[in-house]
Image (cartoon, rainbow, N blue to C red):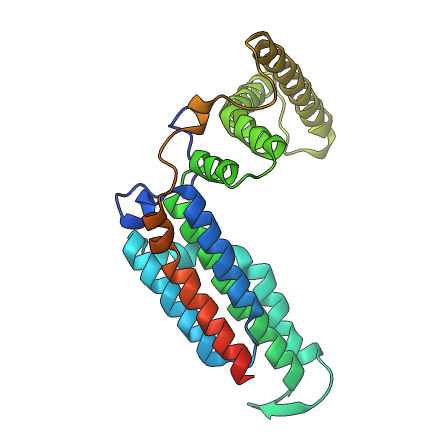
Length: 256
């Protein structure tokens, strides 16, 4: 797989976070997210601590707040749902600025916004500091099922090919007078999607047969897996943030 395959969220940099092996970053993000989810919603101070951890990692990775907040808009549908909870919730109600709001709904809204936003920001930091290829490599080193990692790797490798082919098919349709903006011309668009699927399936079959002829036995060769797995020191460095998050969550659970 070529090294040039990255994703739109990756930000090229030489920061210490970028240099960490992908498997330690994946584990750190997962543990951090579990700690955030396990924190009681009433522990407001704990979420402030998590936000400081996210800000510290973002600064270390040289990822600006404007970039993070702009991409975090992906959670907007959940934000709208959370805003509706205080009005739709049942139980005890309080009056805020003339509005009768549910106390349980307010807690639920805060719970969704705080935990969802922190989870999205942590995922964005992982994506911004790790290429897609390295993410797959990290999952492979963490002993994820081979079938999943290999499907993801081939999807990544041939995604650009399929996108380019779809673009050429669209240009060919338009040059022949097709305009998919009109409802009665959707048939041609659907036929193009079907043809693209068949071409992708046939290409996959040819690639698989070529792999078998070259000795493929269900696992990619060691060349693809790369070198430079995480050292004990790198694991310790990467464990700083999840360890702090776990301690915050434990304290919040003890305090109740």
